[in-house]
Length: 452
Image (cartoon, rainbow, N blue to C red; front, top):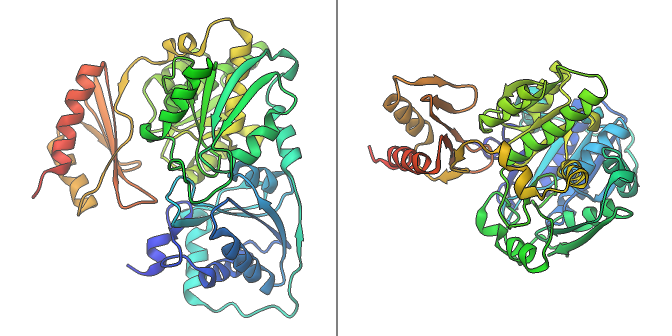
């Protein structure tokens, strides 16, 4: 495997700095991205990782070497980068490694209008150009300017709800020393919410806990604080603040599937009031079976897709879907240039809480119909071979290979797929109740870990 093979993933570039990703490579990617887009200017932003300063400067140097201008957006969240690409109608590069440890960094790329750049929509072409290394400089170098879009982005996020209908709520947000510490307080300005931010200092070394909210261990401080202050809801953001996980007032975490169903139901109820029906809503294949059930019950049309933002955005464009959700905490909105935003999803949930007297712990109950394992990561020496061995063990069950291996045994199912960003197999399993979920999880894990 070449150096580039290890860092060019299915829908972004990601690796350890400087062993896999350094300034020279960032410069080459910048030149290739400029050549690939053919755009007159490219937007560049970064999260708070210390390595981002050098990498973004090198990337900008590569872009300007091709005679293309750079607009430096500075420190931003990834959803702000997508908003910038949509509102300014220009390609964008966001330097972030999302939830990965501090030694990592990466590049998320999109075209004008926030159109995705993934393996099949440009990333392979960019990789090929970088490998070839034949991008001579243009006759004249592009210029670099700066632009701050934070206030405009905050206005955009608030536009998804009826601000006048909101009532006071107490909210605690754990931003994990990530970009949520900068962006969330600005979005909440002027709203009737009492916001407390935990670990709001921007620090890409993550001194308090890793910026990965899908790991239950990283929610403990937030859960304790929600109970301590009697908050109505807790918010757990990842490092680049495009994902969010919710904690109810009893400090119980909500899965991405439950939040997807919650937001979908809210959007469909508003659509009914406006006389609209049969709206398409996307969900990925590791979401709970309750998600398509709830979409259909509320007059929507569920569309299933594989995991990953570039895939979901493409399907949303093809189907004109109004909303899309992933079990991993990504939530996509048609009116947000089909891009994902944890903050917009947060606003929708808080608006729903404002409408009714019931707490979040009650509102979530009808949406949670099955027992789920959550995502279980397993390191194995031979991921493809392990997947095939598990497939053979369930040869009599219904199987599909849209994304990894999905096995459906009627009253329980599971998906096993290689990580796009780490050397792991990811297992998600769902069953009718907690007992059978634990039983089947042990069964599948034993198969995965079985030595050949």
